[in-house]
Image (tube, rainbow, N blue to C red; front, side):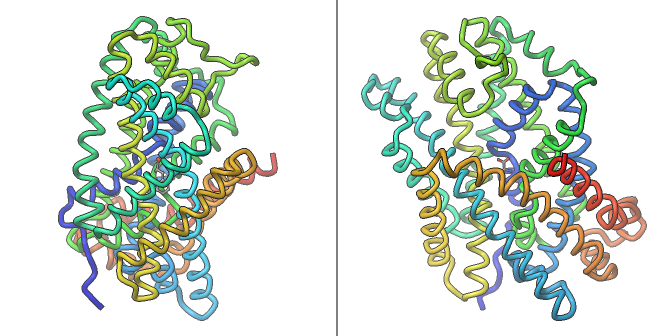
Length: 448
Ligand code: PHE
């Protein structure tokens, strides 16, 4: 077998892993969840969960991946012992690959809308109003075309491989994303009404903290850090032995959380600016419009009412969304591609084509039966499967894998690991605390 690919540098890995983590979950999910759940109170709970719960699980995935140097299926089967353990590992690994693929199948639909709206703004700038109308109207034709375009882009990058595809494009796109985000924040904050939004975002209302909020914050943290589905595991498997895993994992978490926070500085004030412009931002029951309507109706009406700058601002906004989606979707596709290539011996190109086509077919089924399927697939993958898989990763690291093997793996990048606070706290923490906390929050929502 050809030698396994690797990220060429620490920055390359950081950009790729942060690119995976930073996606629609940050730029859309986090701000809207925050707005729905009491503003700053949600932000505080989210921050606590991201570092205390999501970071330890992220570390579990990274350690397993780098040690096994294999896809989720091969890796979990490899670290388990005994026939039963190996079967369990194989089953959990396959489940993770399935969920990653299913997440991509709905994510690509939404990402396609972002691309269409971005090109719609470009068409507006070029004076092509007919085209722009088509691009910004939700019809089956447009939806299918842009699903295909987005999947095509994702596949084109993944087919090029780890360092010349995933790493290269993440390294190009992530700085662009940051620049656009900061420029948009600057613009929105200079508009009337923004300060009101800032207050809601930054001043906590602690009476809002309850079990529902905690569950939502947990789901959001898992989704945002791309956990449970083998993406971080597979990226970890391409990471050099010399890297210090706890440090690099902390950097990814910090990067992800910071961008979510920044996105809140954009979206929440934008909602209040829109109100100032007379745009309807609440529905008939008085609840904030937070779902797709926020992105595809409220904000476009706001852009329209901004006059001449509106169209370039809309373009920048949907470009931001498209970039965020693409650097995440490539990580989702890498999970089944690595499995297909490593377990069947197929070339990367063929593996990408095969799994990409399969996922596209599933997406097509969803987009053509949107009302019946979309929300169900989202809930099944992100609300139920991701936390449960997160528990499984903790169990593998905490209960199934040898503690010594774990220490040895961590020592590679940091020889004095045994004496660090990380080693004193983390193994115990993933063994008991994380599974119990995830399960507790989870059950509370399912039973309650
Ligand atoms: N983290 C991505 C986001 O916030 C979504 C994602 C989930 C990516 C699972 C990979 C795997 O949008």
